[in-house]
Length: 220
Image 1 (spheres, rainbow, N blue to C red):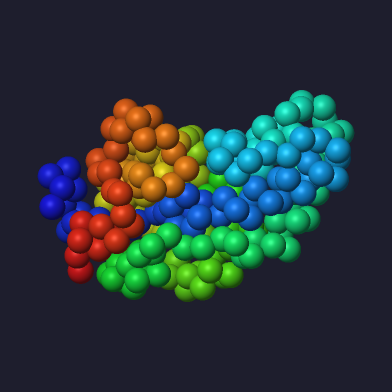
Image 2 (cartoon, rainbow, N blue to C red):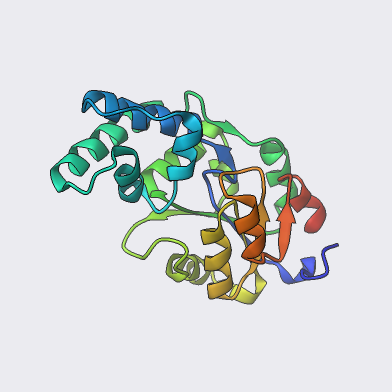
């Protein structure tokens, strides 16, 4: 058992989505490149798109369109969303161990907190067949995005949980920073989209190369 976490102290686990539960990069990259093609802009290799993900759809659109022009941003974002809503399950896959591990965490409350739009987060979870495991799913809305802790604290409050008895699990430093600022435990997965050295430097309580390690970390 990791010395920083006592499993009996965890009541709620909050998961990031992209790069943590699901490898959605192929569909995200396809949608971004669809928007670029429609606008006559250069397309991007999948690995380059991976480094652009984060901070919500508008910030992502700024990166793949390489523009601050409001009109171009609006058109590009609309094209991206049009394609992604229709194809978000074409190539997206759950990471190894996710579907097998979630039932083993049934003694805890499970939630998802993503920086992507609420409706998209819900849709991806439905398409992946794991929506049923989560008592709450929250995406981008009125509250600031991660690494700001406001949305995480709102989920914890909504579920009548305690930050000190909550574990935030994600693949980016933003997830770790949000958890620390909210007063939760933090776990960083290393198989997602985050840069490994930056993740380790953010000092999460646990570093996990495999999702399935959660079931051993937090046995029933």
